[in-house]
Length: 283
Image 1 (spheres, rainbow, N blue to C red):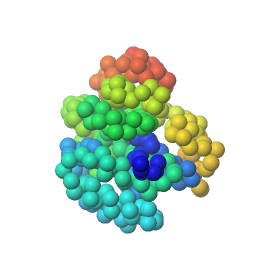
Image 2: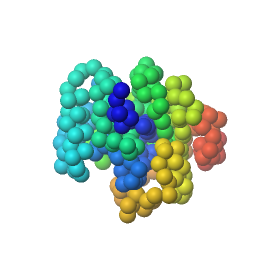
Image 3: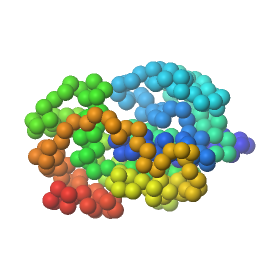
Image 4: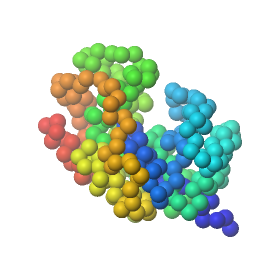
């Protein structure tokens, strides 16, 4: 029988993209109860169909430069071998997390929010004790942050942020649209993950008061929320100064109408801060 620390990840954060996953990675990477991979987003299960904005090889080369110790090097060596195979190898994926030993570890890949149910079912079959969490964000804010990121990275050309037709065309792009329906994402994952192993958290709470959110997540994952993440404050946000597209009140209302049915679905099905989203836009 394999040692307990060779049994793969303890948890998986499946999004949302632009929902605070970078903040979560930093908080866990510097927490003494966790060992986090040197690559924040592993992108193993969605690698066959994800958009290759940044080639996997380039991302891994960057991770080599930032490797902290031998454990990180071991992870990256195993990752190179694993990604060279065209099939999905769950045993090889589990082996990625061997460096964690007795610590907690997991995969934070927002792209997994779009995984088909077949892959989700296989993932939970191989790792039945896996804890899954999702950081939900108001679809209006999330989609606009997504478009801002695409412009920063050159994924799309700068556009007229006051032109409703241009904005709508971008919202309809599959890469934006599929990630902007948290009620559907949560429902798909909940069909496979036991209720006690699945949690939804909210970007609203991260903005409002990150300390209780941090404590709640760490406790759910099995860590000690009373321990600090080194010198990293709970409100640490490396992306806070990133340039964002201007969003006027008129365009915000337009995007809200675009997502009206989803906003109402989130209020019904997710509860918590999502119940406030419809009121925010007068629905």
